[in-house]
Amino acid sequence: MKAMPVGEEARLEAAVARGIITADQAAAIGALDLPPGSGTGAAGDAPGASPAHRESPRGFNAATIAYVVGAVTVVGAMGWFLADRWEWLGPWGVLLTTALYAVLFLFVARRLAREGFATASGFAVVLAVAMVPPGVTAINDLVGWFPGGWGRSCRWPDFVFWSCRGHELVVELATALAALVALRKTRFSLLVLPLAAIAVRMLFHLTDGWGLHVIGDASAGWIWVAGGSGLAALAYATDRRQRGDEDFARWVHLAAACCAVPASLHLLSAYEPLRHFLVPGAFVAFAAALLLRRWVWLLLGMGWFVAYLGWLAGEVFRDSPAFPILLAAIGIGVIIATVWVQRNAASLVARFGTVTSDGRPRFPGGVPLLLAPALVALLLLPGAFEDDAEKRRQWDWQSRRIMHQMARETQKAKAAAKVRADSIAAAGGAPGVQAAPAVLRPRETPPPARP
Image (cartoon, rainbow, N blue to C red):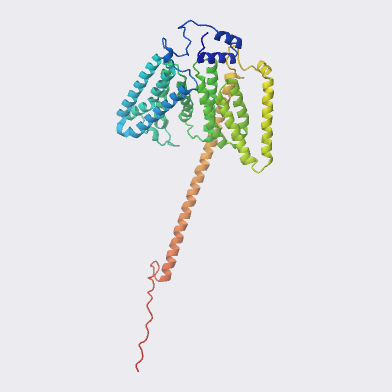
């Protein structure tokens, strides 16, 4: 019996973990003798690719790390070159450079795909998509659609949407279109990440387009919540529907968890009592990590939990010697609860099964429950805009008050200086004219008397 490839072993182990097949069935499948040339390679191998030229299985391995390092290096080098030589190249030079590199990356991607290196080909396609933003910016400089560009200062009440956000919007839409076309041509899941980021950014553009551009901590926090909730629901739906070895939902989960970070920072800055929701949110994130088998939610939950403990230790119980003892007791309780769960794992899974009959993860409540935070955010968003506007008015009033106070102090200082100058002049004689300093002469001694 021939040894089974690493990719096939991982696939069988995943099938057993999801309940699709049993361990005995997986062992029986592994014991099958396949005829030569039957093609047991990893998904994505090109037809006819020899084993000597077959790419390493996709996953967290040395090949994937090398691909990521290479792609990041190329993007950094191109960004550095374009930023340093933009004025020297000019719009036409930038456009030709980005077009040349995009064609080169697509050619390399096609060649790598034919050789059976699907992951390397996908990274080359991502690099080609990364050439779209500077290319569209160069076209904007040539055509003059939005002369203000990125550096235009757009603040209330002089905010004009197309003048202030038009260039950014066109670049994002062009990048999204390029990513969609590339995703249709090649099944590479990393292309989903820029689409998710652009989708969240579109929520901010919608608020700008509706004239709700006075965005502060409260409104920005709820917009991030709505974006993260929508992406979490999309990730779960993708998890339930995707087929094959390509994991598209992974990057949507990552984008959703990333949205939770700025949402937390903004909302905690605007509403301090919300910090008490960090612990329940952490346990929800832990549950999502277990049910959906996504480590990114585990990292988010740990961040929220540690942040809350840090706040308790630094603010609430700073001078309390009993807090460390209580914290240690909580930790012991968590360990005991974990042991109990492991002892009753079979009955808990049978009662609250987290895997459906098709072997895919299941989240209680599904998409509607994951969209609930977005609904709450949309309901609270009008009040958040009013809170931010009120804070902006208070900040403007305080700024004007401070400026007025500084101007008064400056006038008082000038008046005091003038009074001192006038007093000095009056002491010396004519007012307004400073008296000349007295000249000290040496005392004259009388001549000696004649004898």
